[in-house]
Length: 448
Ligand code: PHE
Image 1 (tube, rainbow, N blue to C red):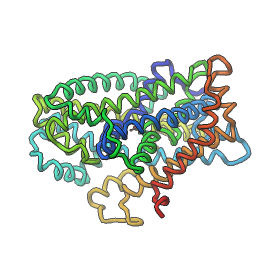
Image 2 (image 1 turned 90 degrees about the horizontal axis):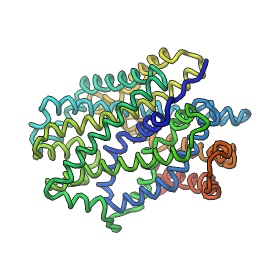
Image 3 (image 1 turned 120 degrees about the vertical axis):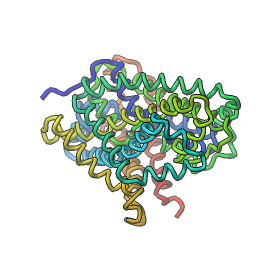
């Protein structure tokens, strides 16, 4: 069976940036920035992205492209004897689990799109927005239905393959995302009192930065760039040999970072302009922002556009999560793509149900003291994701060898690459060390 591949450079960029740009940029980045005091946190984040995120992304891209295989096959193609392919299994398993609850959160966004578009959300009194949000996510049926919609849309786009599915839809959705984002940004920064929000974002106050904050920045860099779960390896395997990988990784990284900053620029000026607090945490976009839109002229329209934006960003990320698993199953078990996609989507939907219900009917069911959602989220983000990232670095740096990775980066000498020593140091030592520290911190082992 001939492997599918991307058809154009722009398509690769749209798909990879689409994966990277997601809830992490528009939902999580603003709220962790808000909780960690703004600009100082952002500077640390930028540093982590450039120093560690970018080199690891390059490594994942070349690992995929060199081997032209799925996330597990890539390891196997290079190391045939030892069971390194198990690292691929970790990555694919992580993508699977993350997709199950990422789709749920995207489902909440779908609920909000519907309520914003029908003008219901704008009529909710600010002090009621918190309980409004909780009543939606705790209502069992609606979030189950919306999660279903997210997974169904995702499966629909993945079904037709890389070029005719993923690439095609990414090329449509990403420009729409950009247009909405720019529109909202202009609206937000032209509000009276917006400057306080810009100051919060761009003027560092170092005293508000904690060690926790630094580690959070590093962890978020990985998450935001979609690293450590086989996504970039899988997308790399659909890229042709002539493509300049360094340039591509740089563009994806810049796009991801710029979009996160733009999302911050939409949210904080508006939040400050209407005298609200920036540190609301996960409720920032669901509870704080609707209060902001209420006050804004044409608020219902901007509110609908905002949630549409988040929904689009989420969908291009769920596509990539599903693709990792689909690529693996089709190649490993020789199953046709359509069949594999439908089957996997159905299984992922079933796995998402306990997470959905952990905000409603099953909120009292605890495993190791956690709800299903917390369990999935913490296992995937705090344990599996760092392990996946660490294994990629060790594999590329020490097993495959960074000199071989560099050969692939340069397309066997076609492109210049002057950072060999820095790359070697980062991928063999710095990135693994950083990941181990994040891991120890996130699992609480560091405080013991
Ligand atoms: N990078 C995506 C984001 O910022 C999240 C994501 C994580 C997507 C893992 C795919 C895989 O939201």
